[in-house]
Image (cartoon, rainbow, N blue to C red):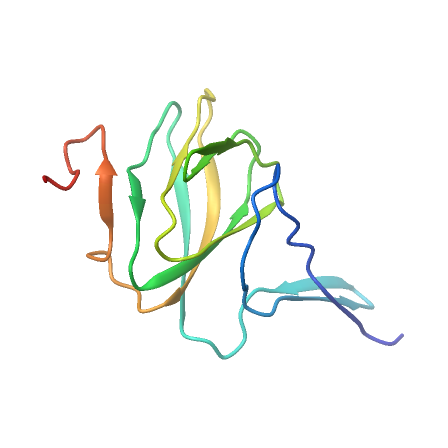
Length: 138
């Protein structure tokens, strides 16, 4: 069986247009397939778990772009002034300087795979609004 490689579908979610994204591929194998989100690029990977009713900071970053892969249904995403409810498996690319926030109204926790491209530093978070009192003061 030959391998089949194709680019992942990173179609806009409800009209949000994604700019340049790193090259992603889906590779079919005799045993199934794999999706490759980064290849030889500086990146940081983490799984964000949002507790039931949880709300992260409304924030942006100066030095990194992010790719979010929804691992569960029930994720609420704010990008700039728009709100989306992506389904499990959907992918969103968030360029640096884009205001974003994760939340869930669900009674179960939800998870998002986050792949950060660029210079990763937790101090590179500019919080605009935060229910835990961590927002930047003018």
